[in-house]
Length: 265
Image (cartoon, rainbow, N blue to C red):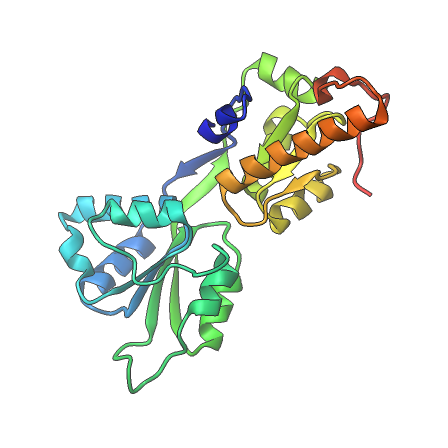
């Protein structure tokens, strides 16, 4: 929101995801005990929510950052790394390139039984996470405890005026930060209007948007909200220039109303 405001935009955040505890907490309890007992060589955090889930378990058991002693820690993304820092520890590995599962696997070391005393990785994450990271780690020779640390469920619908604004094109743009936000927004508020500029944080999110019948106008070059905001601002600048060069009135997307809803091609 701050980055958007820096460009003069007025934004409204619409929560689409609610984070809930796992249905079966015993799996997390067992993994935390294994962490304390030194069963793992690595713990991988792919989201700030995963960090929060582990922190809450630590608080439940009366543990603190000392329990991470001897454990290597990986984090995907600046927000996740900052959340790890909030525990009083520093990640040993953050992807040097793309902040994603793919970027992490590119930097992840293969298991070496001469150098690594243990070959097991603790992976606390959401119930809807994909299998790509687990498959990649297995290929590198690691054993993975893939543990559901939290569930992501659809949030409650936004107020009626917001739902109406989304469906009738009163927003100039909608930014999606994950595939879940696409699915959930369509489910709780309806599909954004044909005139609305659709901006997605990455290719996977863009694909989900297209599968829901939306034409994606903007895709961030790296999975960062700030990068996405910059890309959306640049799209708006180029759109304005094109209108001026064409000699047409400069209008906002919300000021145009085509007769039919936009479909992806």
